[in-house]
Length: 132
Image (cartoon, rainbow, N blue to C red):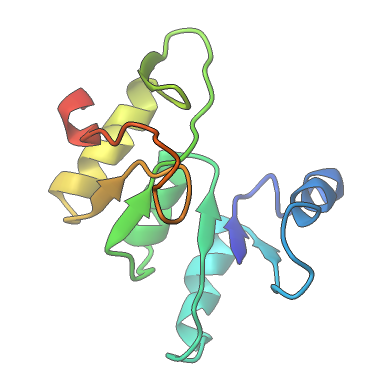
């Protein structure tokens, strides 16, 4: 697991909290967005890497920086003032929508809104592109 976020890469408290929810058998790294772009190509093709981003803007920076991604799971974007509710756990603001639109249109990225790996928790799947 790579957490690709500039703030999380420097914040030991965030790192400790995130590590508590991941099995100790899974390696977890905290890199800035740029460092992720710089090192991702050094990984073995056999490695399975799960990248976590805080915002769609971070995901856009990764893809623009050459990180190979075909699909993005949008599982949780928190609510704050000015954001539109899309699902019970996804709220999109103007910056989120702009980044997601660019990911879709310019980079051909597909999105899913599964809240569990198998998507079997009964949560409604939505087409995020309809909200952009």
